[in-house]
Length: 123
Image (cartoon, rainbow, N blue to C red; front, side, top):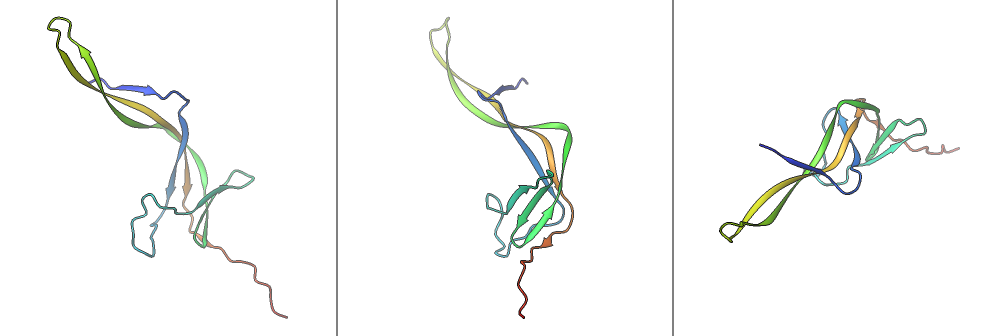
């Protein structure tokens, strides 16, 4: 079986994986798919920092041993002419488009630390 994989017109995007240790739970017990979880920032030294609710996690960036390619399936219908019988025959071809290349991952393996605001003391 031969698969047709094409690059998109533009250069594919650079994505990265996020690896977290432990469980990520919601108070409402809803699924977290497609929902906002938190903010991801990088400090001046390039260390990834993730803020989830009132917690902060510090991570590190690592390069993957082998890059991973994210692809999308594109089903298009082509109309082909058969010369001998002069009949239109519809053929379907499946193409895969390269969406992004993943070369790095961010690892958050330490326990989250609570964010505590500086509260002025009463005198």
